[in-house]
Image (cartoon, rainbow, N blue to C red):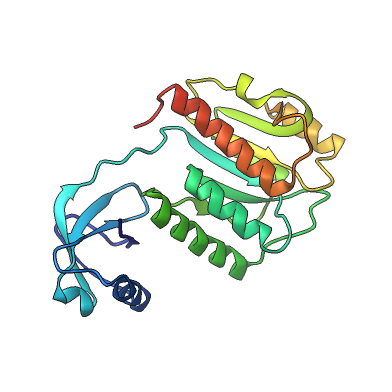
Length: 237
């Protein structure tokens, strides 16, 4: 299946393809009449058809919305950035899984703080992951935030802070929750003060298992366990 991201996509409208998209379609050697699916990154997806106009960078979209299966539970992952390409890998995988928002966390023991140009690159990785995985909602990646600022945004039904002393994450979910915040600390873990601050803000300490995980593994595991729980509950729209 060929999928492209176009934020301006609307049913029945013509979109202008980028040079990269034209090049990508050329490599695929599509034949006239083959379908091309286009999503707007906000949840809507449309079907177009490959024609000679596509070679010129123009694609007409159909009138019908393609049904989507996105989790009704919006998962925000607040996570300290791992080193080097491990952050790229993390963003790619949690985007495929279904995360709604990613917040690079700044804590007392944070080592890596992504710069603005890195955030832009990570957003492109998220787009590519959604194109590949079939998602029509692209997760947003915010500028780095402190733990305190992240906790002060009172928009979550449940907040989980990952720590070895917590109870199992899968035993902590409330199926009625619509917004969930998952917090994953740096390699040196959260400090006692940070854990105390989080708990005062209503966070629950949760464990992801009996082994010590890398930052990116913990992030992927926490999102996968959350998606898995709500998938079992069939909390999908």
